[in-house]
Length: 123
Image 1 (cartoon, rainbow, N blue to C red):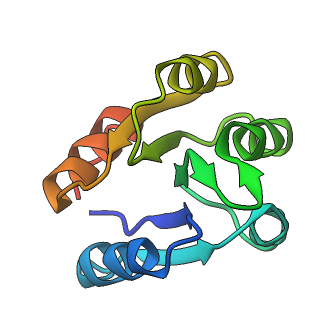
Image 2: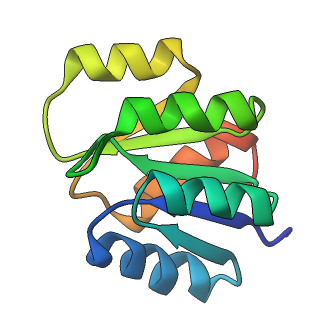
């Protein structure tokens, strides 16, 4: 099994910690970005296999962050995450290239399924 390099973009520390504890346990490398600037810095510094991105952040709209990411790394599979029912934003994210949207709170199996559906790899 290939260890993945996973980017998590979320302003809430608990989400980054959740990915770090769960996916890190399986040997995957987790990079957490809290905002657009940190996301862009991470994308310049590393190559990621998949990204998980919050739909709503205090300083930026997740769809805007998705748009910036897709302009820089069009082939990066992105799974959006949301604790809200945001049908229009989810549709907009899909049009911009998001491959899925996880509804918060989610479980480890939801992440595993999203990775498999996005890149065809079991984790």
